[in-house]
Image (cartoon, rainbow, N blue to C red; front, side, top):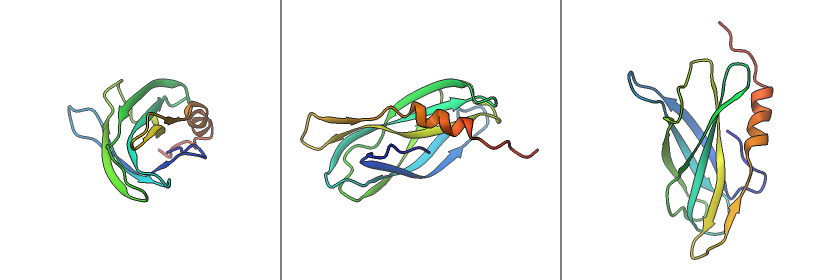
Length: 125
């Protein structure tokens, strides 16, 4: 997981769920760390191959209405590309909208995700 320094939402407790003949599903907890209720937010997932090359990006809406300091669980179905066992999935919140506002907070998480991929430690066999 990656979080922009000024993100109003922090992702925690992410787990990848896999079933035969189905795309993987990312289960995560989103916590509102801001002083405002949030109407909505989006989560972005970056998929890197074993060499650290970006294969795919997928954006999906998170849960709606996240009250101040509250947490909710949500999911993201990773059906945008084939996921291999050696792939790295990096996720974060890239947009959020305050309740009763047209203004959006936005962040470009790709550089943070690429840094995670560059610093990836090889998996033991």
